[in-house]
Length: 317
Image (tube, rainbow, N blue to C red):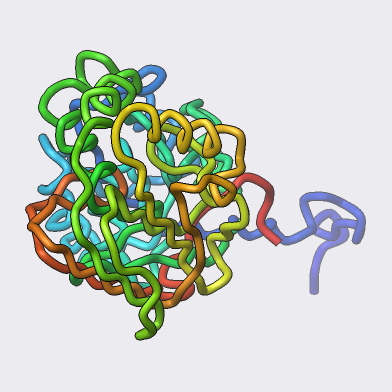
């Protein structure tokens, strides 16, 4: 028999079962230690552990190309939510390793351009970026795949890639976003080269061109809105080719791009595709998400629909 003193009324808070705590996913941080935002990595750790994260996986790398190995290691350790600290190059390397997995990517924009974060509406605000990682809504993001490597923002060959390769030579650390403007001015006089471009295995362009750009989002190199109709989850890639040659023609083309009317320029053609093949008359450097790669004579780019889950502003449903 239960004594009367041990009985509690049904509305007594002490009699109600405790509300179960929402399970916290296994969290991993992949951080480019040379990048900065807010109070730095010490603040990042404090903010993350403030969400009752006890068993935090923490990896710092000295350069972006070291990141994929740490991502794969964290996946083996059971990480479910990845905070990616760095610029577009670091984020691209991590997303390439995460593509096709069930893991969720939370971007902490600590780089120079932060183009992916800007396109997704993630601010350069450390506490808010962490909040979005834990509380933001989840969405599937398409990726492009160029020569076997995934990208989230863009890939390009020609003028765009040469400009980025030049900016990578220490200028970004010294000049920040101005590095792209500076190197762009240096390369506008570059020569065109013969190109053959196929869109979904159909001939689309043949002639001399200075740049081919493939975008997964609208705002690309230098923060210019080149592809105003781009959507990150529509299963398509936007494709642009420029025949501009010399400072005057490039000024006209860039003027149209800056005004959001790139397709109205006589030196620009824009379309969309699921697969793009580019054959070059001479070897040229290519880039993806602001990271320079070696010179090639051909590239093949394909869309990979809904390849990764990312954290976006808003709330989970």
